[in-house]
Length: 139
Picture 1 (cartoon, rainbow, N blue to C red):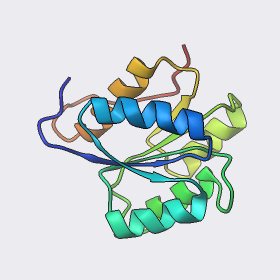
Picture 2: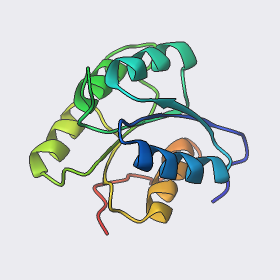
Picture 3: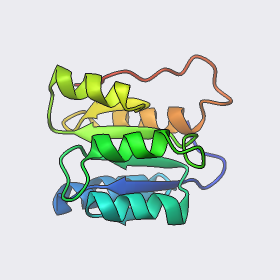
Picture 4: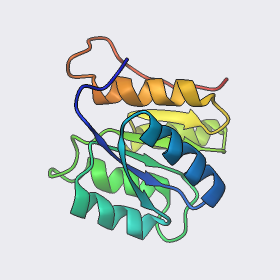
């Protein structure tokens, strides 16, 4: 699935090597990527950039990913933005909390990059593609 219009993605991640790897993959796929290295910087970037999609880690300095997701989803100006929680913590409690906070997808970081990218594309195109309902993905 290829994007027809250039979409912007805000990637909130404090791990420099993972941040570089995934942001490079997103850029190679044609996305504009805005980077935030902590939760507060990420929340400010949401308000400033109004990205098409947000990817956030859970464990971040400042605000954690669950709080960021909740603040986006409970703000009428931004609640339309899909939020992907991407984490190394494969805990049922984290997945359940992410869903309660309004996350559109919960993905474990060791998931193959191609699958992560496909989920992102589906979320960005969900208005035109019926039946897209990403769930927890581990592979």
